[in-house]
Amino acid sequence: SDQNQTINKGRTLHATTVGKPTPLTGKTALTKLLAQCPPNTTERDLEIWTAGDNPYSDVALAHTMGWNSALVRTGIWNGDALDLEKGGVRPTRVDDSFAFVVEALLPE
Image (cartoon, rainbow, N blue to C red; front, side, top):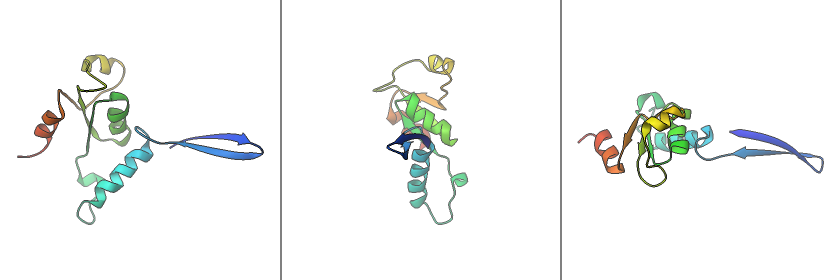
């Protein structure tokens, strides 16, 4: 988490930033995912993907956590993947819809 300290009336206050793409958010999601898996399953046993339409939160979270990412051209982002790569954002795959992501990633 991103922690900042400020002084207020002689007390030190600590602020924590949460939300995508912070590690706290990724670890929370991972904990919830692992709770649905068979006992003794670890992150290394899974192929984890994030899917979303925001390269700066969804793809960035995947990068932060070492997961794969599917960026979808809907909603927030509807651009060119090459433009993103120039800015350092590199999704694992880019699709036109969530249906394509599901089709590509889930076995029949």
